[in-house]
Length: 180
Ligand SMILES: [Zn+2]
Image (tube, helix red, strand yellow):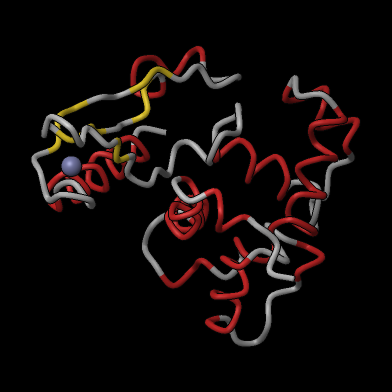
């Protein structure tokens, strides 16, 4: 979990170097607090989402860089969401009831996440633009487990590689919108 804040720092530095996307102005730090559930013990690294604000009077637009820690507006950390859902598939498949007891996440939330992968994500414009990169095709009914198993090309842990792949969605809610 220490690696993810460092990746977010890099993504934030890149966004800041690019300046304001509206007027090209300098960006000031304007991080905002997040209190993701199940992250109490992770400390300050998970208490803030990196964000910037244009320094030019009259513009002042916010620019929030992509994040591998926080997935969009979801209240749980991206990593928790990916892993908890992946554990519902695959060879060591865990039942929703077991996972709920193990992780302290309600059954309803676990089921909703699984449904998010197979409906919202599978039909999103974002996934539609990515799916062609994977050969043979990814089993969409078994996501994210099927996606995780394809992340072996990098030397990062699979979950980190997947969060990096998903990071653009963390700033662009429209990417989640259904493709159809
Ligand atoms: Zn600006």
